[in-house]
Length: 187
Image 1: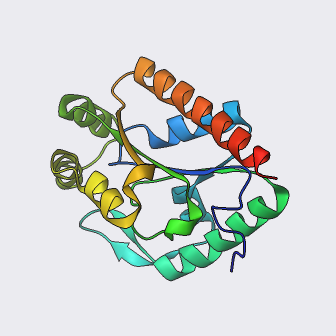
Image 2 (image 1 turned 90 degrees about the vertical axis):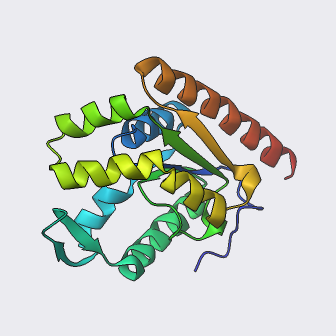
C-alpha cells in the first residue's frame, strides 16, 4: 500500500479519462513526454498482466478483473512515488481508482460527429460504437468522475482537433509546473 498520499507528493499524478475515441492515449503520451512524467496506458497494463476474467463476445471486449488491475497499478504508483516521478494515466473508466492516487482528473469530450468517425475508423462494430456514442452523449464518464473525485480536481475539456489536444497539453504542462513549484516550496 502506498504510504505517500497526494498531499506529500512533489510530482503530480494525473488521470486522463473519457469515452473511447476521445484522444486519451495520444494526449496522455504527449503530456508525459513534455512534462517529464511516466505515461501509464491502463489498457496496456490490463493486456500485459492479463487483468481480465473472461470475454464478452457480444461487445468484443475482455471482462476486467478490477482487483488484479488495482494490485498491479498499486505497484506502479509505489515505484513512481519512490522515484519521485509523476504519472499520467489514461483509461476510459475512472471510478475504480482510489481518489488518493490522483491530483487532477482530465475528462476529454468530443463532438458526436467526431467521435463517430473515430470509432468507425477503429473498426468498432455497430453495437459497440452505439454504446460508446450513447455514453458520450449522456456524459457517463464525466458524471462518474464528478461522483468519484473531489470537484476541484475534475476538469472537462474538448478534444475534437489536434489544436484542442495541443491546447489541453499546454495547459496541463503549466498546471504541472505550478504543482511542482507549490510542492517544492513546501519542503
